[in-house]
Image 1 (cartoon, rainbow, N blue to C red):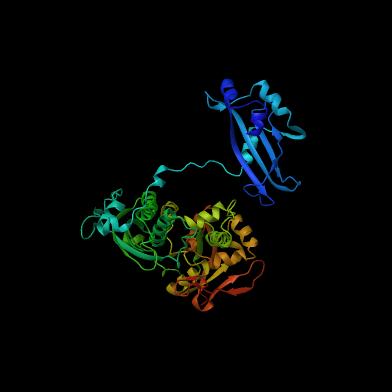
Image 2 (spheres, rainbow, N blue to C red; image 1 turned 90 degrees about the vertical axis):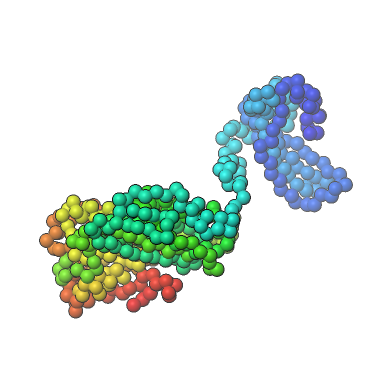
Length: 477
């Protein structure tokens, strides 16, 4: 203000010109305490200015009378047209006055310099300003109605859904396939980095993957939640938003469920229902010696995505000001946070005129699932290390963590790809398909389960080191 007064640019004069100064960014550095009644000498320098003087940056240094430098401030601003409320070029008198305070080091500024400011506008949905709604305000039945009112039935087998004491489904002369999974906070997911919408979506997908592994078509789900009072209604809306997205994506109906209170955070239980003609259903128990071992997609990505999330979460807990380093890991993060059930595989195999002899989904790791097929089919397997499909990002990220990429595929889990066996007579039908990889074959049970090491004939025994919820870590059987 002293500068403005000295250069005869008071409020009256600025009003005549129709302009005014606006500060966009200001910062300070303090070196020594300044008291309220202390005399301070302030220097004025323009250390940055646009070519037309519409943008300026003042530098002020604060000194005590004995020359001690106490503080420095920097203020970046613009001149605006008071009528149009837009940035404008100031009159010649203002430009002349500003030139007196420039030095040889004065930097030429432009609008691009605004991008260097540490803070930028980020608009939000005004709905975020609303007060969160406690679950107790709606009550159990009101909550269920609120969360499910956007769902509708689309499958002909869904005769009666939410609203009665029980749902009614018509299997239409098909076999009914059922599966259920429980997901518990702190055991199966960490809300420190798992978005609630993604959680709802994934909870559905992991169940649909089991239906797909039976070569059946998923048709309905039931959802039950146990939640503590720390979760508002809006949090549950997010979860159900993810559930609805999964229902839409896989053309399934939500036909019922339950909600209750919990003293231990969030627990989700989802039951999935599928339908299929009896002759099309595939079990774990049909593999025979010499059958080919086939897997869909690529493996290990979900586990490496989890490692990235755990690492960045640990960094955040140590220093909340640190920004997470997620750039470049999109594919493996999506594999962990938003996996997809391979319900498409059934149709692809039908087009190839192939019916698997046995099948399982990969939820606990490739090695663990091979052993399940071995146990149920009473056969052994030879898995070829060099044939295991892995994405390049999975491999490079494993290297970053000093992990063997093959181990992430064998033991990581949560890939939700399908592992199945087919007759060797079907080799020509599947050998060139881009989504299927032949990774081994079945042998006699007494020959055991081994991986053939890359570049040699060394046999490495397969052991189950996948996820075990009761151990809280990886199991080794």
